Image 1 (cartoon, each protein chain N blue to C red):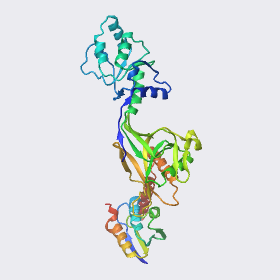
Image 2: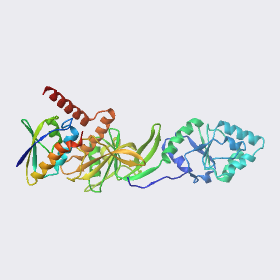
Image 3: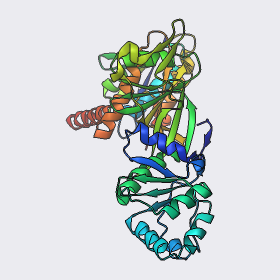
Image 4: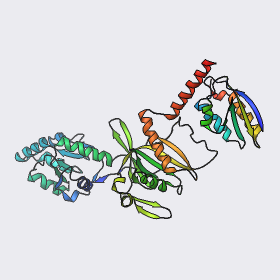
Length: 326
Length: 89
């Protein structure tokens, strides 16, 4: 599958935006080090800096987000109180992207000043360390997931994520319109960002709009329409797991299209095999209906039904019986 | 118009996979091709039609072709059914 792939870094300030978009799920507020908000986070990993604070700086993963829980904060308070600030000074000499204090704990003045001086941002969160790490891991896994962008349309049909590809002008957007009209959900038109997400069972692919400017669809001869205005907000979805690729072809009489549905073809995206159906387009073929049936077939396959197999078994047992009679 | 008789020789008869091979092969020719088993006559270019004949091993089918490439079509179909035995066995 073509497309550009990549992975990025995000500025620290992006975490604040994500928090705001998620209705302050993480409950972040900036404590100090505002000058460092444009620092780059380059890893989805975390560090609990217990050892460095105690003076052991070997293997210190300083480029990771540092989580300061109750234990770390209590230790820092003790160090400041006893005027043993040497390790704290060393700690802040590293190029740390961000420190997050959990439980909304207050930090000593000394640390606040250090962080402002070195432009190392400190956030605080009302959450417990465990909860914060769980939430932010999910968010950062998503942000740092490997991705490709592909040319096509993405729909959710009976909760099956269907990527519709094909040459320009073959009728992808028109098919999408037909599918939305039949009650299915629109995710994006033209360019789809496909991410490889780690799950409990391995990896899966997730498709979402590349740029989230809104659910617009371009239909030749009509122009641009806003799907949510025309069909309702209920027909819009932000993302879906990618389960099936539908490749629209111009009808070619000599091409061997699948006529039984025994064999599956696959396309590989980011190293994951996704079933692919090639559907020939010609006048009189109702493409949205065909795509809907292909998605439904995927649902049935997962439930263990296979019409082609079922018919074949019937014919075989019929022939066997007939033979016995003869 | 020409007619040949072929015998189904593979173990499992004309089930789904052989039907699809036969229909795809027939579709490559311009001639009209029919398959006859006893009193039922079906279109050789349709998988479903062929399947519903339920022709098991040992059944004799008549294949009738009419058109400019009828000889070639019948020769190819005979090859598939009797010589290649649908690439099974």
